Image 1 (cartoon, one colour):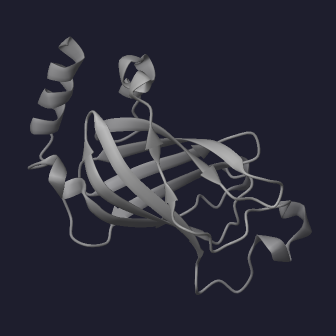
Image 2 (image 1 turned 135 degrees about the vertical axis):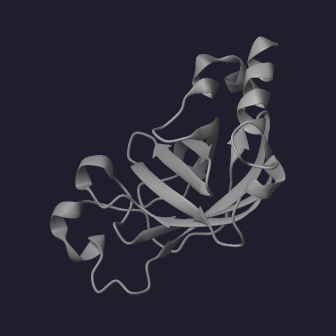
Length: 166
């Protein structure tokens, strides 16, 4: 119960008027470094649609697209390895309530984090369905950070709100 009060104070004192302002559309490109990216094309853009969110719940979906202005992408470079085919269909994020009771729910990334959700999803891939863990962290100032983690995929995205700020 103490952690709920702490999260509430963090959200209220963070400069974000309410968590409803986190709902809407977010977008950002994948980290370009091959050192922190595997299985996703370096031209990948993440589109996140947040229908409902607060410190204890999340209803969201995402799609991947290819950055339109890119002249070449991972399939053009043999050393990039196999990547998820883009664009993909809309994929639902699923939250597990057990994560809320674990220290992982309190994880933060660098910056002024409001809260982080641990979720999971299944991404269609050339090698078969890929189950991924998704860390979604909302930050003060209209920024969200998303990490996809699985055996064949690791990617970091830095998103900004595309339909109004927080």
